[in-house]
Image (cartoon, rainbow, N blue to C red):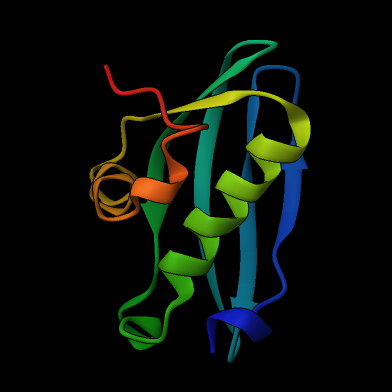
Length: 98
């Protein structure tokens, strides 16, 4: 299912979020911008009804792909994003561990 999830980016001057709506349920991953070349992923929220469907994974992968395209790094402060970053060694080019 993760490949079929449409994710939108909503950005403000100080940060933003990646958001998707699946089966009428909204899931999000929020971030703050520490510098032009660094974001901090600070929260991931996936409703219980969507758990186990790859929604959180899709949000994490989207953040990684967005960082690669934009030329910035991610500090995975959020426990979910941190766990995902440790499982995916191929993301090391954009993950900055604290």
